[in-house]
Length: 306
Image (tube, rainbow, N blue to C red):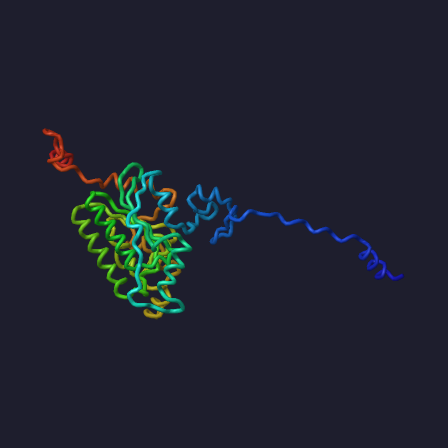
């Protein structure tokens, strides 16, 4: 028998290695970071507000989670939840617009791409609007514009500061001009709010683009952004083709806009609520002289007198 035959016979007679049983991992127990691919226990990630503990990547969160992160427990009062978009153009692409709306309503449990309401933030009254990218890319249609306008008008009436968390691909083309006019409508409401010297702070998250960037997202008294958020009007490829030149690698990021004066501050998500509450305290309107106890001087006048 040759040495080769001896080895062949030995390999046949040796027992086959037993396959190790695969470990069953419960769905959703671990989350993989889309930036660094690190696996993190989902509960730990949620405790850190969906910010990767390895690379500080801010994962996308949606409107329900945002409200939970920013508003004190038990103080949220939603507004205009019954508003539903119509189909004025009878728009058809691969699917009728009204059918697409129904699909997104079933998938997300939302009526449209924004949630608005009133609540407390560290005990301070605020009016909050949160856009949701899951619903047609957070696109701004007539319902989004109407809900935000009603929120702004209510905040002006109640003398509340406004916080809008922006996340949008821009205006909703399926509604044509009715979508584009929301840019002017929300901007006009914010101008009336500003005329009363009340505070408005937009928070720009990934992504904030198109008509939202060209309207209420850039009209804040202070404009905050999350790290590495994409912020711009037209897409990078469109800008490069129009200008016929190569753009910087960090073009349209929150850091690029901060360097060029379009954003006032970049705030880590775990510090966002405390930062917003601090800004609200600093900018709270002074009481009117008629509302003050008799004989007490307005703090501003007292300061000037010194």
